[in-house]
Image 1 (cartoon, one colour):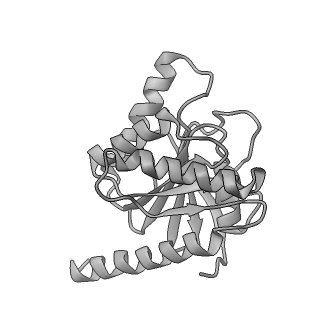
Image 2: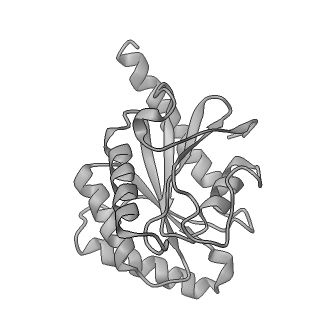
Length: 207
């Protein structure tokens, strides 16, 4: 897939304020500091698109980016380490849950996992919640250039093994590195396929 344009559109406090749901969109979420902005920027071919920050918890709203004027990348707040009050965290959680469950043009969620770490309880819990809500998702293991390949492979394998304990079918997964641009073509290829399915579904419903 050729990325011709990638433009920031809007940051919304909840899904009802987001752009009209008239094109496919793909949400990106992960623990704070998982490398989400770097991955989004790599996919969009624009280093300045999503704001990268050394401070976890910078993303606090639902951020829409228009790609090729045809589909959206959505940057969601991270879960986990952000130093915020309990009340603020609850507010974020509700905003994210409402968006994931009610946004009708959301095609897929890319859940980002740090490939340098063994399986984290917080990631597994979030994925199980997605399963409970019947939200389709793909796993993206990030920062694979920051660790030797044997460790990365072992961590990916351990995560999938952990999922097997409760999941009958495992989702697709990709190992990425924003620095080496690894995994970019594969993820964009999957999005391209899903875009086609979205369009076909729309046509068959006559809208």
